[in-house]
Image (cartoon, rainbow, N blue to C red; front, side, top):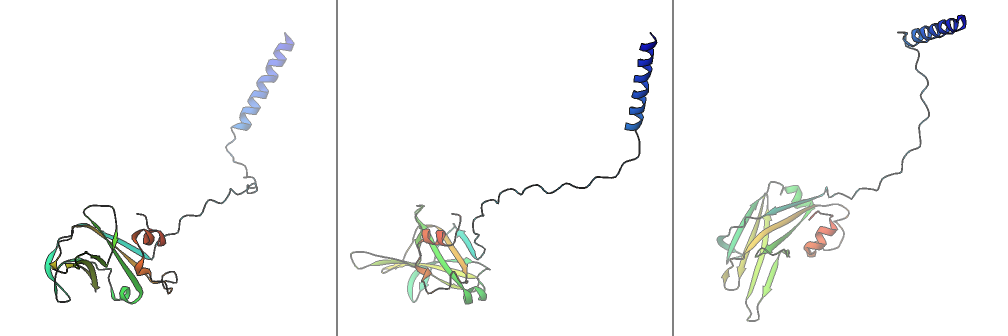
Length: 182
């Protein structure tokens, strides 16, 4: 019995001592930081952006009677404050349109000749803060059923200032060339 009492006392003292050390309110010094682990693999590069290209879409084409180069024509004006003098000095403007709600994009200037010698023309001019689209035929103004107009303002840079004639790009070629989300 003495032995049991001795073991019980010994365990009680050990318990009290371990409890008192673990409840000490003083905090010890922090250890040295460990070595940096291995770096993960580099991720895939992101897609190139199109910071030098503005793309705008207009879908409310309403014609007004007027003239183009002295010939009767319908016209539609797009007001755009991004068409500044700097844009005219150093940028390229490409304009495309859709007819009859179809998903086909036609480039401007568009000229459709008929077998009888007549033709239809959809073209544009631009000036400070404005693009004007004209629709005419050999027989007078044209009520073209344009459902959307999309235009690109492409800032001049080494990629766009080569001798290549970018004004002849199809819509699909322009979207691909300038990495535009369609």
